[in-house]
Length: 190
Image (cartoon, rainbow, N blue to C red; front, side):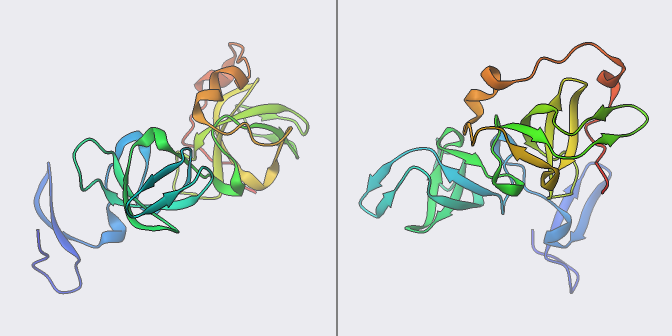
């Protein structure tokens, strides 16, 4: 509801706190498919309606919950101030322009007490960072099933594979190893 204290944006209810005045920057709206308000997305369909045209490859931004039943969320695109979209119609643009399913080559060595990834190792982008660091990607490498790496230390193998549906065909096999216990909630620190 409406904030009851000056300086707060709205009133929220949490399991252990029935009335909390909060700032918008301190909470996050849960949207389908792990999308978040403010995420940059790329359109995967061509669509024309009475309000305009949306083309494959158009860049947009998630701006909120869907305003119509049957859709997943609202996006803003160059030709649309607000457009209800389905999750399958867009894909997340990740740091560095990478997409889920892109095959990447590591540019520098990385080692911590649990895992190591060498310069030249081939891996797959499997999603956004699981931490708040928006410069990181969640990647999978042969010795590392899931870890957040800085996008600046990755390069595309042969150009974008573009689309979450290609993840299965480009995934790098992951052997059983002690790295399997590595938490994806850790980050590479440069």
